[in-house]
Image (cartoon, protein in one colour):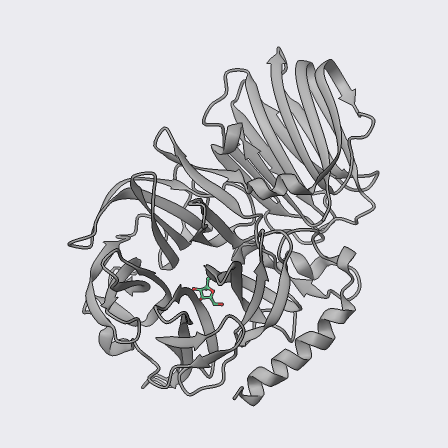
Length: 493
Ligand code: FRU
């Protein structure tokens, strides 16, 4: 039996989504069914479909009491919304069902593991949300909260950490059939650590060890861990709060990849190196799934807490806020985590236009190269060109600009003129990891976003843009001579 709170959300979303026309959403990115979305949760392949759940506040375009929205897809591009999966409706989660993950049980049911938040007052009278780990079990459509919730509470936090930050369980099954779960916690040093728990059946959990300590290296609290093998290495993704700028990582909240090795017998993770995951403006809380064909596919929230006020600038009533990235295939090249756009995207390609060999200086527009749902492949070679840029989502009022400076070895995305009326972060400049007078770019536009894959996915930048859809121009500008190959497809479902 569904609770009234869940039924209310399910009824509400059915009506509210009717206000949103298909062309007011991204074409192929998953956006919230209605209201607000943040982190993707429980990214999984279950009963022949990919499932993405997400942090969901159906009733407004702002963060509020957290439900889990739910959508399924066979190709990660065509999404079907399912009714909200869980709602804050039990004593263990009355203030919200925070982020978590999913696992298929041996009997074929799907287990959701999430953080339940409940109100508490400290002895000093301060109101806080107490975080514990909870379960729900279901069939891919309806989920029932486990009567034994919470299955991990503050009693299960080992000494050396606080009792307030304890969230975002990431569950997986080991080869021997037992389960493991990583949960973020804040250490006494003020920064994050990940606690590892073990279970035979997914329901009864025991503390095992601290898997890794942040020790104030990457920001403060660590949220939303993911942990998986990839091409002989072990990858840990964590979303770090309150980072300082360091190396390629920008300040604020950002996702970091720590690569290393994992000894399954002793559950020991040995770190080797680290890097940022996405170097753009809007990216946080990535999660991965192992596809049936062996690919490790990553999704993420295409937004960032520090940029999430971008939505207040839209004209008129805003109908939804929050989308996930285009799912990306992860691979390792020269020891670095790289990402390429999901190969299924090629099935949406229409209207190929190509200019195999252009040489130009100055400003250039090309017949047939425009649009807001576009897959654009570019290979550019600088023959003495200090500054090359591509404007897109452009008309006389608006543009977003991608600028390559071969001599400085930088690439910059700038959406200051994309129509935002907010003075938030709108620009990011990265140092290119390989350059040599050449660059290859793949720019994927989908109405409200741009994702730039640099040099075969060595570096990626994501940004949302709420520019008027009438701005669909694309133009090229070179302050010196460049040689360029361009292939463009429209992307359409
Ligand atoms: C990360 C996060 C999680 C939390 C969720 C709440 O973006 O802060 O740590 O579970 O959002 O919506």
